[in-house]
Each structure stands twice: as structure tokens, then as C-alpha cells.
Length: 257
Image 1: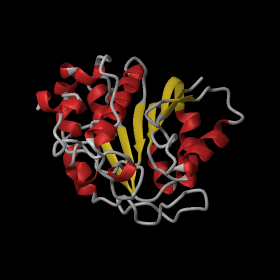
Image 2: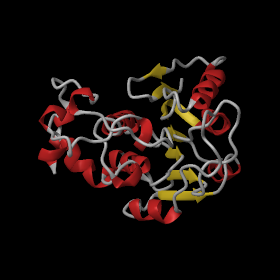
Image 3: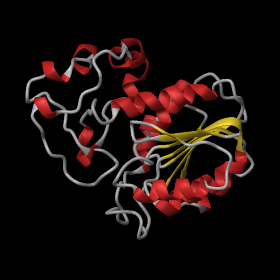
């Protein structure tokens, strides 16, 4: 497994090459377009994380299978999974619950919980918010997304997160379901809801509840297929003191002052 995953794309045969583009990721419902090995996007072979077997050994069971169709996408997904775990580490010394809005199959929540395992106090939770019926009605700034996209049964996430007793999955529509967490303080919030209104609702609810130094990670900020997520984030932070950091993975982050 380790040997196969971390081989450089140039070493893979045409049948082994992972799909490329947004087509098989949660950022776009469009079908993938296969490309020859020479055209496939590649990470810099000099960077260490791509061949970090210790990291993979810890998180492997949470990221397999990943993406749509249960196929693995080291060029489109693995970098974002690694980034999520690295940013989650910044919350280890903080007190408070954590949350993910847009749970889907539970992979992101599992990576957060694994990274922060052993740091949750008795009253702290990891909340996972999702309709598990796909997206709600979308707006004019939400590109090609439509109601019902990204639906997956709650049982998938439940099975994936069963090993973490501090997880509380909340099924239903945002923003009403957020009320269950209104008495909690948070050290990390992962926003992965794809569309404008839901992104705004999540930021609005959690901003006053995140402790100083706490992390907001917006999964969809930098994708052409999620223009609403970008617009909502920028509009929300327009009158706030925090600095938004856009990442090369399509994610963006800021730390609460």
C-alpha cells in the first residue's frame, strides 16, 4: 500500500494513473477526463510530505476509499487531507469542541478526530453537521450545484466515525441544526458546504463561539466550481480583523483573534 501510493506519477503505467481534474472530487459533479501520464499534475518530488509513510500509517484507514466511486486521488485529494491534519494540529493546545459542516462520508471529521485524539475533555465534542440528503436549494452564485448533489446516507459517516466516542453527528438542514451546539466553545471549525448561503450561515454561527487562536478552515474557497463559498467568506470577513490565508490546495484558513 505505502509503496503504491507514494510512487511518483512518472513511474505509473497508464492504467495505474489516478484520475485528474475536479471531475471525481467533491468540488464538481462533472465526470473526470483522463489524461496521459505526461500531462498529469504532479507534486514537487523534492517535498517530504508526499513520501511521509509515518503520516500515512496513522491516517490511511480514514482516507481509503476517498473521493467519488471509492477511487483514490493522490493528485487531487491527498494534499488537502494532509493540509487538514496539519492545520488541525494547531488546535491541540486549545480548549473547546470542534465542528465540521458538510460531513459527507465522514473522512474530514475522521482526520480531525484522529489528529486531536486524546485532547478532548469530557464535555467537549466533535460535531458533524450535514443533511445527508445532499445540498439544499442553491443560489445564483453557486455555479452548477443543484439541490440533492453530494447526498450520502448518514450510516456511511456513522460507520467511519464509530471509533470516536466524542463525535456527535447532527442530521438536518443548516442553519437550524447548529442550535444544538450553541452552548459550546470551539477551537476548530471545518466548513465544507460548497455553496454561498450555507458558508455564510456557518461563519456567522461559529465566529463568536471560536476561542482566540482557534482555526477556521474553508475547504471550498479556492475552487471555480464553488464561487459562492468564496464570496460568502470574503463578505463575512470584510469587517473582521482576521487575515484569510488562501492555500494552493483550494482551501483557505484564518485564525480567530
